[in-house]
Length: 120
Image (cartoon, rainbow, N blue to C red):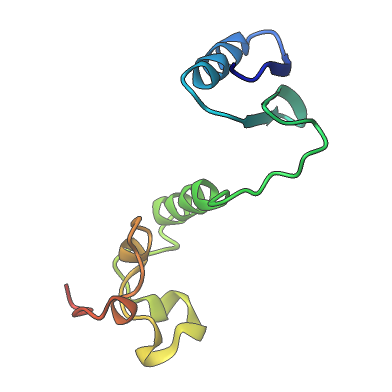
């Protein structure tokens, strides 16, 4: 038996509820989705857990970091191909070779940590 979906969506966000129900129907045991727009909660859904459960969130800031980095690149304040040491002073020589572009990739660990040639 699939978990029951609880919560609410504001008018205009019914497709989020529909997709959330599809995800649960496809076999997800539990899920939460809460969305704010202009400080108003427009989506607040959960399934398979109570409203009092604590959720562990991973990678929550990646999208915000990418958006900020792209704005800085557009404004000319960040060169995606400059050495990281030009942007992160604490990265000092030998600590984090590579560029912001390389570090922004899903496998963006510095070359030093991968054990590969930083010039690639």
